[in-house]
Structures are given as C-alpha cells and as structure tokens.
Image 1 (cartoon, one colour):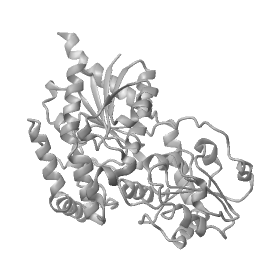
Image 2 (cartoon, one colour):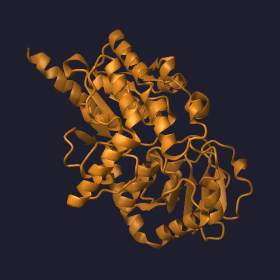
Image 3 (cartoon, one colour):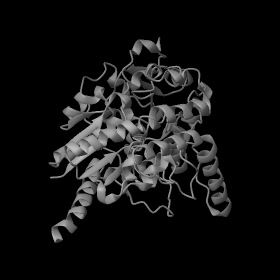
Length: 434
C-alpha cells in the first residue's frame, strides 16, 4: 500500500478529475489524502480519501471569483488573464507550499500528485529530490511543456515545424515569458525563494518540466509531439465517466427520430450566461433538420426561454446514453467534455478561448475531429456553418472515431495508479537492497 497526497487548487474543473484518480487509488488499496478547498471536503470523503483543508490564504470559492478577487472587475483581454494568473494561481502558492510541507510533516507520503495550476508545487520540486517524495504532475488540461516545436501554452496556436517554425516558436516564448507574463513569472520565482528554495528558470506555467514525471490524462494522438522534451510523460487517457443517476427527461424518446442530434452545453462551471453559447446555438439551428439537445449544467431550463420546435433541454443528461445518439457536440471546450465526446466518436464544435479552452480547441482542429470558432461568443451564423460542416463531411466523424478507439483502450485513472505504483516501487528498491 502506498500513501499518496493529492493537491489541487479549489476550482471545480481541477478537483473533479482528481476525484476520479482518488477513487481509483482507494480501490487499489492505497491511502489517499487530498489537499484542496473546504467546499470539496464532502466530495473528497465520498471518494474514500481524507480531506486536508487548504489554509485561508489559499482557499476561495470559484463559484464567485468576483467576490474572492475584487480586482478582477473591469479587466479584459491580456490584462484579465495576467491578473488571474497572478492573483488566483501564483500568490496562493506560498500558502499552498506550507500546507504541503505541514501535511508531509504530519504524515509522510510516498508520492505527491499535483495538478498543474497548484503552483505551490514549484517550491516543492525546487527542493532536492532526496529531501522530498516524488512529485507527479497530473495533466488535467492540454500539455504545457515548453518545446521548440510548439507555441507557448494558452495562445491556441498550432505547431509549426522546420527552421522557420522553430524561430517563430522561440520568439513567441520570449514574448510570453519576458513581456506578457513577466510579472507573474517574477512573482512565482519570488514565491519559491520565500520558501528557502532556489527557483529554476522554468516558466511558471511549465513547471511540470521539473517534476519527476507528467501523467497526462489524454491519449498521445490528441497531443502535439515534443521530441525535445526530456521530462518523462506518460499518456494514460481520460478518466472514465462516472455512471449517471436520475430519471431520463420526458422527451427522451424523441431522440429516436432520424434527424441528426446536435448536443450543446456550456458545461457545469462557465454556464451562468446562456447567451454565450446555448441560446446562439438554439437560434442557429432552429430552422435546420436536426434535433438540438441542450444541457444547462444545473441552471434552470427556464433560463433558456421558449425553445424552438426542434429543441429539447434538461439541466443534466446522462452522457453515456446521449452521446451514442449524438452526431455533433457544440461546446465551450472543457477538456473533460471534449474527451467524453471523442470517446464516443462524436465530432465537436468548440467555441471557447478562455482558460485552457483555446488549447483544447486547437487540438481539436489539429486532429481533424472538429471545428474551432476562435471566440467564446459565436454568432448563430458561425455555429450553423460549423455544424453543417461536420454533418456534411464524414472525415470529421471518421477522425473522431479513430480517437475514440484510442481512448477506449486507454487505462485512464487506472493508468495513474500504475504509474504511482511504479514510482513507489522504484524508490523503495534501493532501500531494500541496503
């Protein structure tokens, strides 16, 4: 049995995939503690782990970021992104690191699993390896390891190879690290120094390069090749979706018609404004010969107003039952939701460019499994054209089906368990030989 410490920022989309990993570790007999925000305590305990609360300086409620971080108000574009990186993710790093150190002092762990925006881990990996447990970075969004063959994470720029591509990528890295995000980078390095460790030159968003390994929750076919990266990267595939519970909506039998089903969702987090994607999609397809199925992610269905005749809606829907009947998914680009669609061979229209969504959309375009709209607020005409393109060109469905086959045979969270067990066994071997 291994003793494992998981660490996550108190953000729903970050905690959720780690809960799947937690359940798998517990099912394999390992002891798990989960360091994250107070509001996730019940979910952590339901997964079979011990909840370790983040200190107040590192905890917040991601459902109301405006209240937790008043300085966000009125910011847009690069200024808003820079503010969020600095205030939401970098500044809590020192308190996160103290919490990790305290948890390890109270009870040592054989391995620490960390999601990439838990930036207190930067100070942990800056500690000599013989004075800390192995640290594994869990890739819960697209891989951000720096490479001469890829653009910086967050831009949504497709890879460019060859001499000119390398020059372009290096120039973009210099701009992002030295200009656009120079302030968060300085703050991240100061945070590491404040813990008594010496920061590396690694860009703060690419700190997993200094971890013992990266365990990426996708398949290699959905990620850009980086042959110049030396950090071990293990692709295990996305976590298997949890079984759905609850009754099917009264209109469920309408899915049996011959019309293509187009599912639209804004996920369970960025869904407070249906005018971003849900309502434009309903308007875009109102006169098309399709059945539009909308999921509000827990928001009242009434917020959508009167539905077109060819539309149905529910707060939540059982994806494992819905997606096999679906021809196209329209989404704002969550990593988990896109993987879920591709698992079932469903091509996607991605209309997101915030957080990691621009990178998710870029990988969808790169793999030919869908269309990216390069905006978070697409016009109905843009959505209509994209959906028609996916319905009319079977190449997208074939590409999605190929990726679905790869996802189907990937171990998912059990693959994370296997890596943990390998790392623990490898670390224990020299001790046993003494």
